Amino acid sequence: MEMTITEKILAAHAGLAEVRPGQLINAKVDLALGNDITAPIAIELFRRTGAKNVFDKEKVILVPDHFAPNKDIQSAEQCKILRTFAREQELTQYYEVGQVGIEHALLPEQGLVLPGDLVVGADSHTCTYGALGAFSTGVGSTDLAAAMVTGELWFKVPETTKLIYRGELRPWVEGKDLILYTIGEIGVDGALYRAIEFTGETIESLPMAGRFTMANMAVEAGAKNGIFLPDRVTKQYVKARAKRKYCFYASDKGAKYEEIREFDVSNIEPQVAFPHLPSNTRGISEIGEIPIDQAVIGSCTNGWLEDLQTAAKVLRGHRISPNTRLIIIPATPSIYRQAMKDGLFEVFLDAGAVISPPTCGPCLGGYMGVLAKGERAIATTNRNFVGRMGHPESEVYLSNPAVAAASAVLGRIAGPDELDHG
Image 1: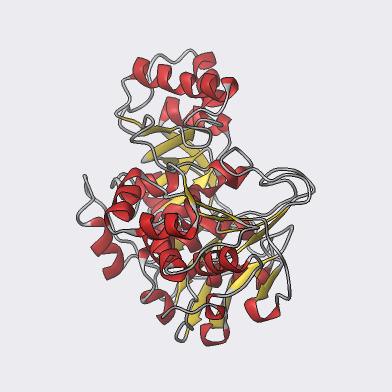
Image 2 (image 1 turned 90 degrees about the vertical axis):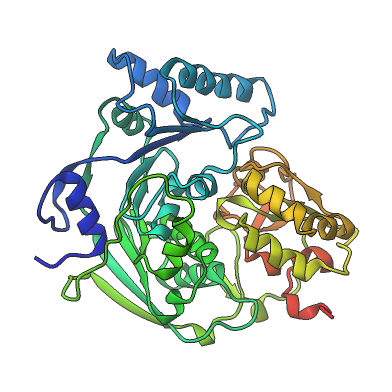
């Protein structure tokens, strides 16, 4: 039987020769991930089972990235639960403040997630790792607890939607725009419990940062996972990071897909998702006059070094609007250090931005940029639901880093072409 890349990875981890969509399987996980919001619940449930030890102390990863450095007493207690459990279990992959980064950027950067892996995490954007050709998906804290005990979980094999992107990207258009445009076309439930397989000549030339962004937001279309076929770009990324063996899987030519859609990217301009859904997208030329109070560049979606480089390119020689706040959040300490070394921080500070340590922070309305009633933000984050970044009567618009940076300068949602880059 010919299979897709998702089906092949699931079959391999279930010890089966083949699987088919809709089939229920039990599969071994390579990594089980929790953060400071979801892991405390999983740890409590783990203790209730009576288990003494996690299935593998090298494969259970705890990352306090949502409210760390601790913003209040409650968040301090949450993080303490992780810290205590990690010490008790002698976990090799617990990241304390100073080493911690946003989980979905940190794990690939550290070579912990590799092509062909099966990864579960108690965070919906665990699907980010599909950029490497891994099957990765978000689970609840109960399932995380089960995985911590047994090293296994049950799955229903998803059907696959194949998306083919052709053509050359226009200036200032990147992975964020491709995924926002796609979600705008198919809707927030357009790939419900399906695998999204990203392919095509445009994808083959897309850098890893753009791939991570697209895989990250597959869940915003309702997908179980998003995945790329690993290639030379993937190999270049993982070869210096991998600490163990990995496997490149590819879909068979005769693999069956529930749906196949094609996109001509030459017609796609920078996209902006209006409140209160990631699917409520418009091209930058259709925006109109929308003043903003805040711009956020960061998150597991767009906190990569390439994103900061793009933002600096737009901001260089400019000051942000006196009516606007600009928050820059490098996704990991390594990205933070490299951005500082490359002089990007000087550009950001000269422009009037504030630079945060690596954290999810304002993305989920946590801290470091929560919105007040009536305020409006443009952000490179992944969700703009009601109250996502603060007050329920605030608004969040989603964009790529170039648009967010230009908007901060002009004090309204705008594209980088409106600024002088000479």
